[in-house]
Image (cartoon, one colour):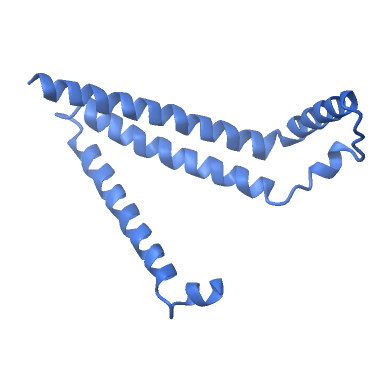
Length: 139
């Protein structure tokens, strides 16, 4: 009985840590999508001041950095990944915390993980098979 309780507590803690990490991914995504202008201006000014103390000259302005390629798309990817990770960890947390009343959440969590595992195997096999469209485009 003691080992089962210990494993349950460990699983709950792992899921809480995963939820916190997913919230960090969501925060990074929000920063990259919505407040990138303020962040880039501050970072550029800080880099300019640091370069001036080391006798380097940085030319240009922060507005040129706003056109950084794929910055918006990376932010959206962080948002989506963080949201999916949060939902998955919440399902696992609720299922492990309240196992008697939330068995369906554990079932949904298990099905989602199986689907993700199958998707990973399929994508990996597309890269490994020499005659697949993905492998041909990669060359």
